[in-house]
Image 1: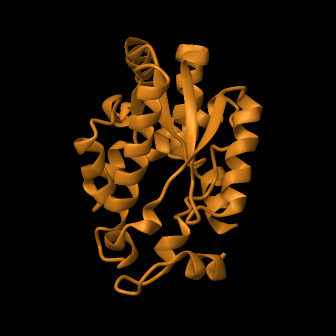
Image 2: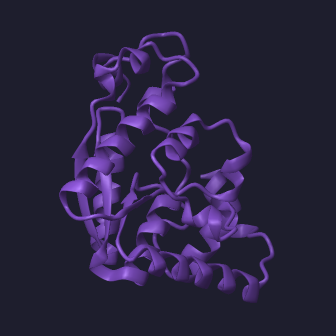
Length: 211
């Protein structure tokens, strides 16, 4: 509750014109892509990106969530609810990262193997349903963090339109708030596998116990 209160009580100052320009740059970029698949976890960043893609492209944008044991059922329900709220297309795709021993061993590159599997499945989906660009919700704040998933994105040529538009996390929350999106103050939430200490094998049974 403290985090939510801080977000609501003391929002950082924003330049309205600059913020609007960044959002329009995002929309313009998405329109140039013509058809997109959004890697959609249901968190604030990917949810805002899915909404923006729907605003720019309508039914030529689809949000796809990994049907993975590492994603809590509550997160999936939240993702579904927001898709219904905004009216954008939403599907699930099965991922099989737990079949990869490099993922199971749970070293500091675990997130790479997770995103590599997700992007591989999304590439396959795109090839089977007509060409589309796969995009995901990395923002400019993420670029300075250690995030192995970004390496997977580069390998699979997955675009990051939020970062390309120069949007930071706080700006995404503010734009979401201004658009009346219910996810604007949603707390950050990592996958269940992240609750397992590095070096401890991560298995479906372990994940179910944690959930």
